[in-house]
Image (cartoon, rainbow, N blue to C red; front, side):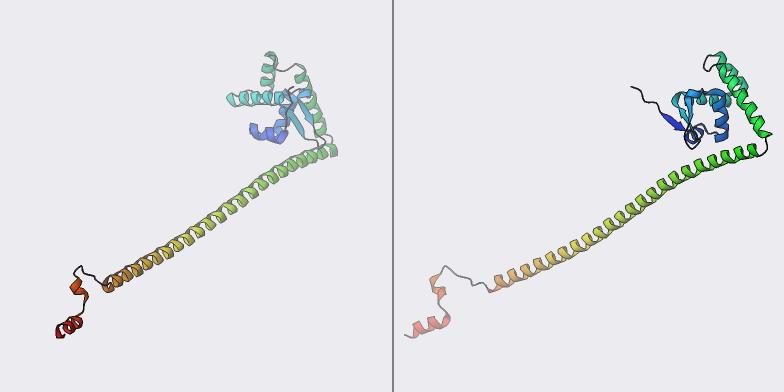
Length: 207
């Protein structure tokens, strides 16, 4: 079972690189009502099919000098959108003109749109700020770990120097001790007459 994916109008506007107000105008002209919904905050949610239609409008707009009405007529002729979209967009445009001359109501509507735009921008900024904070914390942690590793390496180098010095000193002591033992070691001869000292031989001769 396929799961329908809905995207916020701010996300769609960013992906298409258009202003949110421009996107709302495109929604009324090219995206059927079942492919665009409004959440309780009054923000549009756009389906994958609606996003595909908007992407094609963006591509055609970038490729030539066609107006939105011309692009709408082309897509109707190609069967990608229904003819009722033209009627709905005209009604929406007429409503917009009525609001533009209705004094306080038009001002209230403009303020509401501005509040929605600011709210979406604030949410986006908060998300980016949270990501940036996480990256800064990660960078600080990595730098601290690197400093700890360098400190451990320096301690290891000092310990190796100390051990090497003590080993050299021990080797020197062993060498000197061996030399002293070699100098004082008695030398035995196989000649039995050499076992006696000179005084012993003189004593034997006097007898």
